Amino acid sequence: MKSLTQWAVKEPLIDNSMSKTQTTPRPVRVGIGGPVGSGKTMLLLRLVESLNEKYELVAITNDIYTKEDAEFLVKNSPLDAGRILGVETGGCPHTAIRDDTSMNEAAIDSLTMQFPQAQVVFLESGGDNLSATFSPELVDAFIYVIDVSQGDKIPRKGGPAIRFSDLMIINKIELATYVGADLKVMDRDSKKMREDRPYLFCDLKSRKGLEDVVEWLERECFFPLQATAQT
Ligand SMILES: Nc1nc2c(ncn2[C@@H]2O[C@H](COP(=O)(O)OP(=O)(O)OP(=O)(O)O)[C@@H](O)[C@H]2O)c(=O)[nH]1
Ligand SMILES: [Mg+2]
Image 1 (spheres, rainbow, N blue to C red):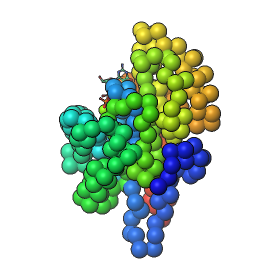
Image 2 (cartoon, helix red, strand yellow; image 1 turned 135 degrees about the vertical axis):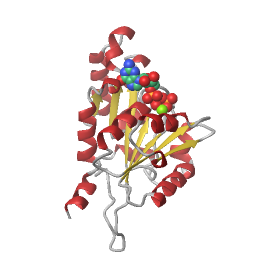
Image 3 (spheres, rainbow, N blue to C red; image 1 turned 60 degrees about the vertical axis):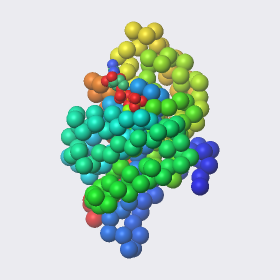
Image 4 (cartoon, helix red, strand yellow; image 1 turned 30 degrees about the vertical axis):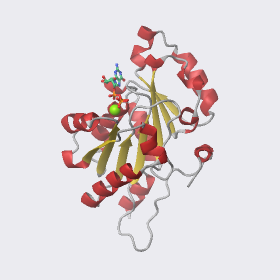
């Protein structure tokens, strides 16, 4: 098993090349994590809206006590209900994505058995604290979502997700003036913490910055799918 610090190593994000016996590559798995209410489900909704016509998608949400986020997506997203699975973790969100990922592995297996043509699995973690990260065995890439209403201090508080997630999104920027968050401070601290790792300022509700997120995903995570499509 890879250690947490291996998130720090800049490697190609995806290694899902086909073996000779496989007819389709393993779907790309993209984890979405972040504190409670930062906009993880909103990101998932916007990504599904943007990518559903181009790729075969399935989505998994984690909530501690409910399947609320899955129900929200069933109601609001263009994905067929069968392609969305809610996992009720019953405990610490990070346990289910990092320490004992069996519930999420079972959910991925179930969806990919039902939809063997699936190319992308989106997996939203339950809202958590700054120490949460995904096991690199569970996902190929990890997007971390924070928002301005938690305070402009959040990026400099650091932690493995702020520092080493593959992409960090600073969401709800249109609220910055209302909560006294200085985006320049968030920019400066994010740069310091993440060095050359990417981060984007977004207002996902009104889709501001969404194009850049989609462009990053397709470039950094979906290239094996495009290669397959061309052959
Ligand atoms: N103003 C504004 N509100 C947003 C934005 N993104 C999400 N929201 C709202 O913020 C609230 C929480 O968003 P969610 O997407 O449910 O957040 P989450 O991170 O999935 O929350 P949990 O799964 O409960 O941890 C909802 O009321 C969203 O409509 C945004 O960019 N701007
Ligand atoms: Mg959510």
